[in-house]
Length: 222
Image 1 (cartoon, rainbow, N blue to C red):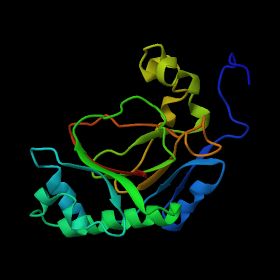
Image 2 (image 1 turned 45 degrees about the horizontal axis):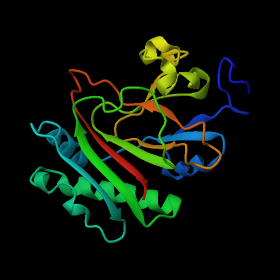
Image 3 (image 1 turned 90 degrees about the vertical axis):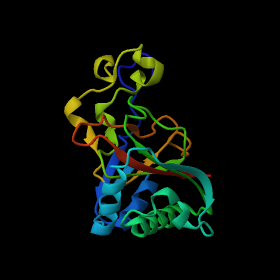
């Protein structure tokens, strides 16, 4: 396609896959799927921990490449182990790591877990990764755009320094979608073979007075 084409379009539209069945995470292997979101129910003990954690005055975080089979998840956030529901939270993170490793046949993963009081990546973008798992534990979830609603020429420097809302990148503002809290998101990046130019387009959400913080987990190939 000519560089002067109005809109960078693949041979077929990449699209997202939404479900409430964990088994559907395998849909990320479909060539036409570059984002998969699975909503899930979590127990109240886990929710209580997240609610208490997001009320803490100081940020917490964990960034490390871990061996998925030998890492002791109880050591994730030891400074918060006094909060009710901490063990349930650690168990849930361990569950997500195990699923991610099983899905992609991995032994090690890059695990990032942090509380955020601002939009870490406020511009729509793609990631130079193979496939990233994201899960927002409480607070506002990651936003994304389906392929028909984004002009990829306006990503990065193509925006000309303009905000996403002004550059022409967002072709339909009403089409911006948000991952629910606790949902599991899989986002293909530019290192996925065959997906080099069509990583999932997403951004961090703007936080609100009602949801001033979020707890974000991301998993990457290591």
